[in-house]
Length: 431
Image (cartoon, rainbow, N blue to C red; front, side):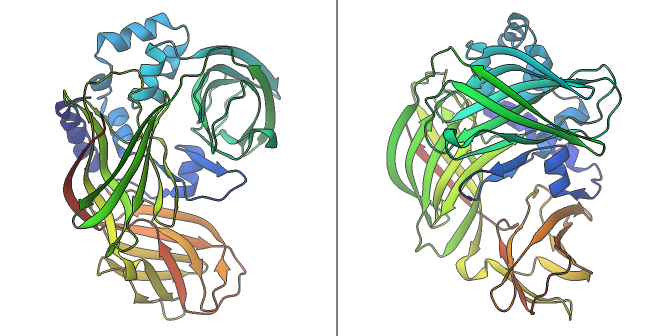
């Protein structure tokens, strides 16, 4: 989309932010309404974020901003059944472009168990990813039924998976969703056996599907960049950019000698010579790795475009001083002993739940906390996290520790995201 269209969408976001937002259990939201992540074999920091922009478009009826192009209407009419998945792909220009270019394979296999028929409708694959479009219909009304798990066997190697969920299923009404699987290494296989588990309060069944893909896998486009740029004096090394039909992989490193630790690149996109942009993925995996200050950011794909010029643009990042990336608390005294800055206003302890009141910008929608350790270095198990809006300038973030864990005060909590930003004007020529 162009800069002008992005401005319109940002105006939609601003309008949505004025709507009171009730308490959201982040883990429940990820499980039941947004995206669920599960990493196989190798534990990594994968960033699964949900976007208020998508909710804004749905709630305010502004989806027409994304669907007015003749091309979009044309592809919907050409591909039987895909019109039902519009709500799951409308905010991903890369997936839309792949569908427009017939980079999709019809599968159409169904299994029925205990009153629910689950169908894999279509599949899209590139060297590192697999997008599964599926649907389900029930013989009775069911609330909050979700795709609890999606698994492959060990022969496919390490991978991560995630999906949106089926909510409030009505009898006889088909629900359309998508799931994603990303392989750590390039995957040449075309035959797959996928196990998908559907769950609700009174239902739990695993469905297993086997299918083979016939279409050729598009070869990824790789650009070696190896350039060091600065955002607010902090060095960012852009190593390479790989573009595939499903997503674009930006391989970056942050200079370990930087004064600040960059937590997230908040305004980060590809731009062509005409000002068309491909920004971060709105609902799905937005990054992975980040061991030793290097890893991958994922953007929407422009694989089927052939711009004459292509630039990587960075304007804003979350960052903290390197010695300020932890919160230290005393749960007995309900006191904050150390914090990144003055944004954290208070701590409340109720049983095994820790709740922080934090001054944060209205567009901060991140799960802040990582590992929790006690005074002896023992890592504590965390059951869930929560976030709620107090007012336009304050939010409440909570951590629920697993019950009946013994620990010694003080507790140290790693900060993964934080409402502190640096700004810059970085533009790197890629092509």
